[in-house]
Length: 188
Image (cartoon, rainbow, N blue to C red; front, side):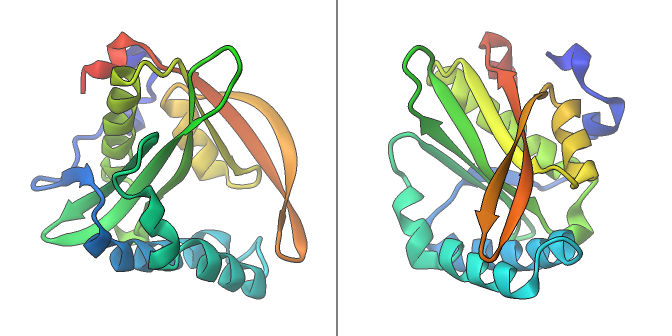
């Protein structure tokens, strides 16, 4: 799989970066990272009231708590100098014939993007999925989010289909990608 990676995404992460499982104490920082990155990423495509409502519902620490140390969840923070600068959350999804997971969240603060942090989170998650014998991972990203699409494509995700999704009062077109998980992913 490494052969398919875009050289841009082969950056070494910053010295001192730690990728670890999230704790309950991290959840306020996770919510902070979500607010900052959502506003920076979606300020031109998602109405402010829809962003606010989504962030309030989805990133309230008590609403994230069920994912901490839960079976079928792989929820990580990226920590640099005792500060959470990003996070990623993988979730096992039911499929009748295949062990599948979905990357439901991956965000890195804007000032820390393009430093290999997102890649480090992905590699950690892929290794955990391989260890859990998942066969496939999928992710949905806003179709107009070209940088995110290139990031996922650079990490072996292949476009599968577009679909619409309600976000508050608007419909957002999402691009769904899939990626096989294999024993090679154990090599972090």
